[in-house]
Image (cartoon, rainbow, N blue to C red; front, side):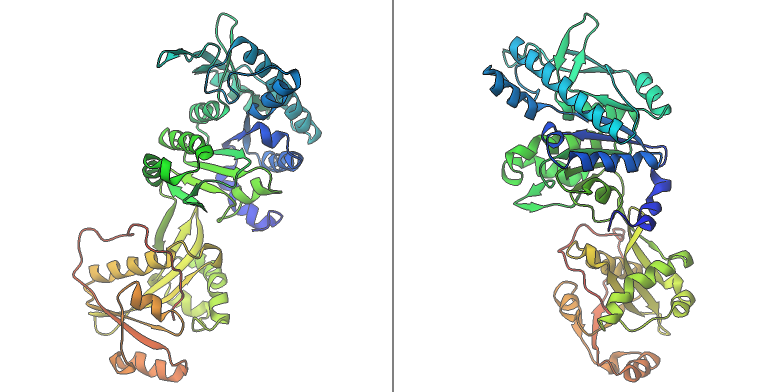
Length: 446
């Protein structure tokens, strides 16, 4: 999606208006030349009445300041030991980063305020090692943060915490972001760093369920590159703590934040805690979206041309696959005069969602549905996706004589010479529904 597409953006606005987005920005992103564009993206979100809380890191700046002062540091990311010298450098670096963010927000006419909303306690002694001035979140002043948000002010939270005795502790900014997002009931937590997202076995993963992420982390030595394990762990903690959407994106991509928020495909990795994808019955209000979805397949002669009125007439036989309330897949199950026979038709997937197994899920969904209706044989016609049905779904090739008389007559009139594919269905079981993730193929069938 082009972030400038206002119609695309407005589709999401009702979902996000007056909701909280927690944006966690790495220090390296603040130092990047694209940071000004990121602030423009935040300004767009604020203009749509989305509440923003901004947590920032300072590890990159702490390293630079340490080198400039020729003062070694004990740890740069707020997870290891923080000695007195490192704490001093961390306070200076974090304060400078906060100031830079406040300046940038003001430049974009966004009201913002630095807060001391994080009450901390010492991380303590772990495995015999005293972590000194490294702390952990003990309590969050939610009332303060909500007061600022209600007045349209963006709270800016540095990776520093304070206790009741006037002591300052270094914190890991990602850990702070998780706790604040949970306490405020944020609908999105967005980790913005300098990587494209989570990669497993060297491939970017665009979306993962919490259970999938949890399983991958159990084998993190084989799955994730070391520098991404911490982000993955914090994303998992946030998801398990009630944050419905956690995003990990590259802050060096122009308009990347808007593309992640206002498009189905996004640019990074989405971890979802609730049902992110679902198959449901199509409704009349979906017809406009259905026509747009099948248009490329009709132009490519993968699908027979369908009119708006024909879909409207049989809309109860169509099913759509949604991602965050956006239709990205379509399938139909057409009944036949013989109740033991049915046709799978109109299988189509948005090109932006190819290779994610959506076509397989839809096909298996209607197979299960057909079983529940007492159907014993299901058939489909295909000019280009027949190998998918044969190799992945177990269909066998038939002949036009296998079709019911009325369907055979229509087949012959079309002149498409589609292959006839047939599958014998096993009896229905209690496990019908959307199956687990399947191999990624997203074909179209007539």
